[in-house]
Length: 235
Image (cartoon, rainbow, N blue to C red):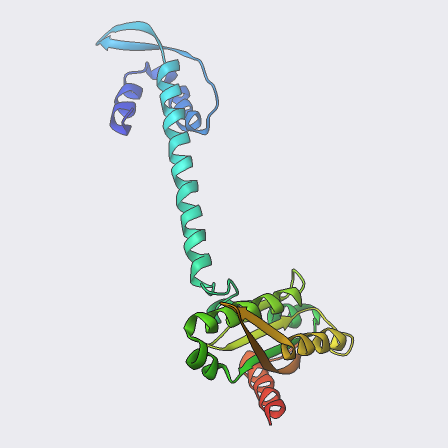
């Protein structure tokens, strides 16, 4: 029933029952089953018994449909938000998504004293792979790197592709010293990676730089420190 029709019908209810009618009109869209008989006036001075059950049922159905549409709309918005922070090729966070995860981790550090490690990964000699084997091979290498990074993290860590051949890993809530064996395993995995593409074995190497963080760490300063360490290892 259209809102104006509901209002008109409510207006015809005997004045003595008007508060009940208003309450029923407000409550019924929540899906509650209400049955009340009201004295309705068909013309001035004459009151008959009218059953509002069908009207309330239609109101509840309309409210349910609206609730479903709102839920579908919210799901679409969540999907679009996920797409906006996800790298389409690797499924990792993109630069925006990773920066958001980094901001959250640093906020937790400020609140609770959390420490952790940021690692930056840069592929070595990636351009010659594209030039020699084609962009399909280059994409296969990027996807393989993404898989290696994901196997190295826990559910509360974060990974991201933050540039063409640049990746990042955030090991949050981790002691910088105790986590070094994990960092070493990741370095070894990245140095021994071989990608198979169209029957061709493509050896791949990557360089990793790292920086520790804790309470009071600035995001840009942390990224810069990890970047400096990365290029120190490239020499």
